[in-house]
Image 1 (tube, rainbow, N blue to C red):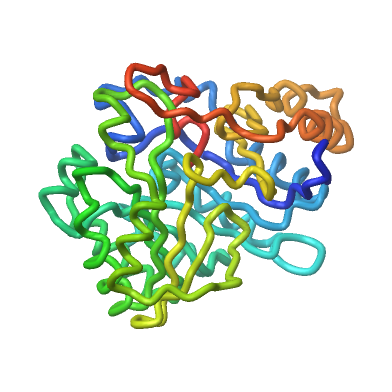
Image 2: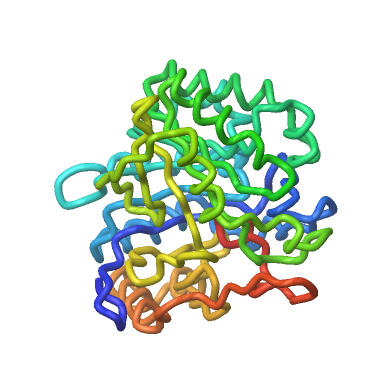
Length: 329
């Protein structure tokens, strides 16, 4: 499955819900209005759509949200997709989570075929964690992380780089990840959705962060790839990897291999563009069979743009009006 620029589309990120049990300041407004449940695809519909993508050559699927693990019955979807792992199907099924549900679900995720997870955790300071997430408790997320490790899941920590908030913590986080055997990825904040506050006040270029880190740590080139946009280096002192996701300072559009499916069946061909395709209509049309569904997907892929239009600046509107939780993190 090739897009107009001959990039192979092999990676599908699926937002199974726009709901979340936290309200991270860079992702959501505190008083969010979520989609009516009747607008969401059923888990069976999501599995059928994912199956169509797999048939077209997608070999990596990541389930996201919102917080994917708060969706009732979501393990049914993990189990269904887990059965597609193998020759001619998926190479990998992964999940991005805030960790709050992992003490209950880590073992079930491993049993379903998940072998690695990304956990969003921007700080190791309890007070800063509460301020960033508005509602969260660091202890709950840490308990989830160690439950995942005990269940045999490889854990990668994702941290959004926030100027004046957590930029003094990256040395500590690198050391902590090294101690516990986790990789770490730092992410630039992206101009998506209306939030309280000015994103210019949050934005921290990772080019600056990397320069600072290189003063203390030995960062070695790495060929490691996970299918996503992160560029990795190995930290010699810990033996773990650090990834940098830089949509603002160095976009990764030239190698983009992914599209995003929302919980309502909307397919976004680019995170930073508004153009989208409605796959719910053909999915629910009794006259459209699986071949017709695949044709609808191919038609959408044929419109995938060359790159995003993210811009951050004071007094500028968000480049994309929808919140990240709608599209899928």
